Image (cartoon, rainbow, N blue to C red; front, side, top):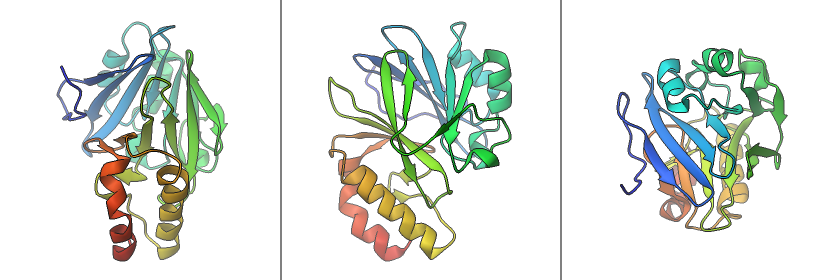
Amino acid sequence: MTYSGAVKVGGRAAVHELTDLMISKVAVGPMNNNAYLLRCRATGEQLLIDAAAEAGTLLRLIGDDGIASVVTTHRHGDHWQALAEVVAATGARTYAGRYDAEGIPVPTDVLVDDGGTVRVGEVSLTARHLVGHTPGSIALVYDDPHGAPHLFTGDCLFPGGPGRTTLPKDFESLMSGIETKLFDQLPDETWVYPGHGHDTTLGAERPHLAEWRARGW
């Protein structure tokens, strides 16, 4: 079945099969959060991005092979409700942005900085620190050697705009970050996996950058 990225709470996972990586996406919880399970094809090692809610759903997705690590994209509570239970069940190593770790009530084993590397088996993901939605939000880039990059944005970029912020300076910081660290460095074909809702591409969103700046959110 062709991957579209369309999932719903209580529904089946959508699986994006790449040459070196399998990406399984599920929607969980009352805020329709997306969680992503990444599996290295060469080693079978798995990594979870955002243990947002519904630990039972996530553990069934993970299966008997377990996970080596779990990355929390940012400190907002809807992205870590199941983190403690998932870590207790799997023994996974925890990762989060350096400046958001103190706001996550599960100890962070690895503090992630801008340009830092998170590995799952033989696959490397590069972190991009984006300030604005929260002080320490991170996006993760998989630069697929066999095709377009894949970008996990948490709540910093959705189809239709950046994540909400509360102060003008926060919005300006977030916009500057997503422009210079994402849109300026990655091609239009980059597939975007957001923290909520459907997937998109940078090419689909790029024409709207000026509009987003004009409306100020």
